[in-house]
Image (cartoon, rainbow, N blue to C red; front, side, top):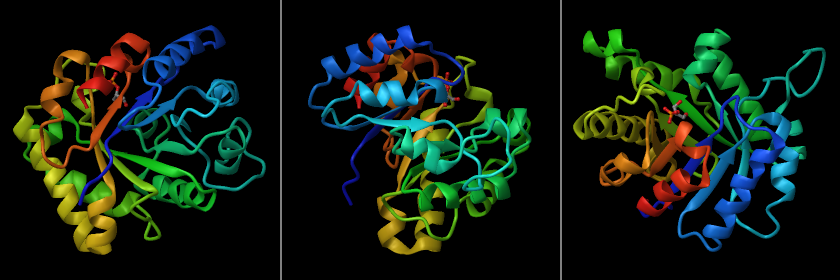
Length: 247
Ligand code: G2H
């Protein structure tokens, strides 16, 4: 099964309108990309970022959505609002949201259902803490998050999983290639078992956590790594472009 590679940028809570110049530089440099590109700026920039794309195939995505379609949820944004602003995808269950907003697997699953109903691709994040890894619980944790966070209606097109070990996020630390490979193979096997070979083999698996131009190429040699979810190094076109080229 040939899966199209995906380079996804997560700007987190970074970016003012002037920073969209980096998006302009990125799409100029990758006018006809050989891989899929996704950039998730803060919600305030979604519409402006989408408007700058013209016919470029880069997708714009959100970083979270509410599980409800609408209603009295001050400060929240629904999946259909993201789509209305031009988003085609949304990151869900990032460990920063699980930590900062006490998001549970069940909440992530409900958000993913809403996102799929709105036609969005979901990038669902899973990851273990350093304590969990040191206690040799990594696969148990990832397996539990995977089964509880991913909704049953997922398809090979609308489901992307990002494995992001919490201890590697923004820390400069990266797992060994064997550690990444073990978790990605495990996720692939679990997806195939749950959804069958069609969905299980076509959903893309991204690695995330301190991916940078210096380590991207070797991470992309790992089987079942179909791309990366990139935080800090997606903020500048120079760094993100180097990672895209390595893919
Ligand atoms: C992990 C990643 C992007 P960074 O959070 O989701 O960020 O590349 O800065 O570690």
